[in-house]
Amino acid sequence: MRKAPIALAIVLILAAFAAADFYLNGLGKGLNLDFRGSVPAETGASPKPIPVDSLYKVGDEVEGYKVASVVAASQIFDKIDLSSVKNIQVVKTVMKKEAAPVPPKPGQSEAAVSVPEPITFYEIRGAKDQGSLTYLSVKLQFVAQLNSLTENLNETNAYGDGSFYYNDLNNPETAFLLVQIGDNLYGFQSDKKSEAVPHLINGLEKK
Image (tube, rainbow, N blue to C red; front, side, top):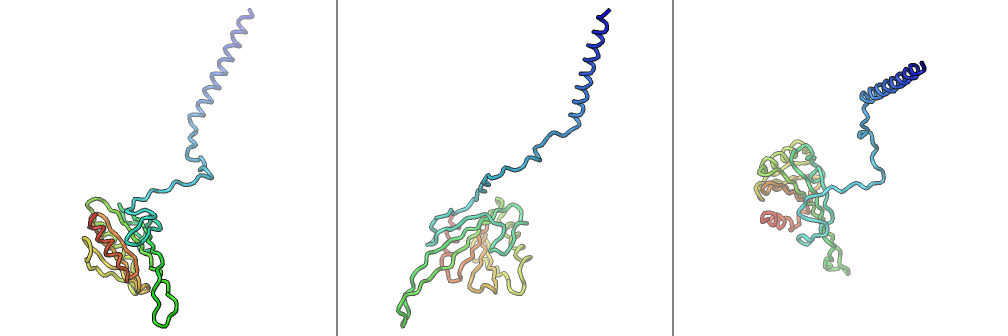
């Protein structure tokens, strides 16, 4: 007679476990347990540097100048924002030249020191076989962002497949030149007296 209550107790216990299992699993299915989006970023870790594809690297000697820095950029001439132009990569390279003594003029006892202005060189890498379209897109950004009172463009096409000067009346001693060669564009910001830029362009045309 005692077997029936024992059997009944066992059945009730198993039923209770089954119900608990069903309840817990049912809750689990309705919950989003994916915490990947809420994991905090690691602290103290140094960000990985973004590789920059450039013709030059820091330390290179170019036409008597030494490459001081090479960085990714979104502007050219620190003025015209190109971030809205699709399928391009902009690289900004600064080249510096060591100071050189200048022979004293008559009546001067000591030689002066001349510190040449650096050359800022921009590479605008565009899509393959789309050089003319990249050139036009960048030129339109210049037109849209120019200050009509102090800035203008002078398209001479004297270099490469197309070229223009950007003139800034607030910087009358500085030359700003943009040149298309093949798929890419190259910008040069330098002293107007610099003789290095034509040599740099000639080297690019031969590459």
